[in-house]
Image (cartoon, rainbow, N blue to C red):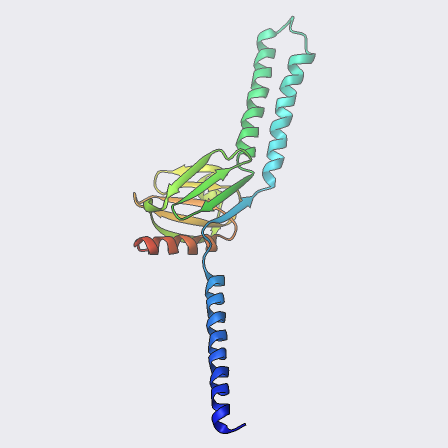
Length: 202
């Protein structure tokens, strides 16, 4: 083989190498692309203990209503039955609704669903969001307890556990906070959506 014959072969090898590098870079950029829909959740198993206490109150109220004689002290017994049942239902709803929270971020909005029934639920259009931040330590103490909380001076929050969370800065100057695992990923995606929409992300 002459040198002239070998040169095209070397050129082909170089072209093939560039094609491989280009293909690799395209695959890398695809792998690094942010997902269209991000989902996350947070769970608090301690809430199940409180739910058990609510179930016991409910059971006690039912037992009082079934097993006791209603011939004497009807008013006091009725108040006890109603009180136990009402307390049991309130505790059950208040705890089971916030055993876990599910968060979804798509191209248009952030949606939060609480509990197994998805209630309470909140949907925030990204057009109402001016910034997103990662909170490393969200505590129920900051918000006055677990669950769906509101503070007029700050905003609202869904707190189901201690730990990391997502903080949205809204256009009205208030904030919305939600405890969710891998909150940093949600912040990256929301900031990317805001930059695409032309909103400066905080």
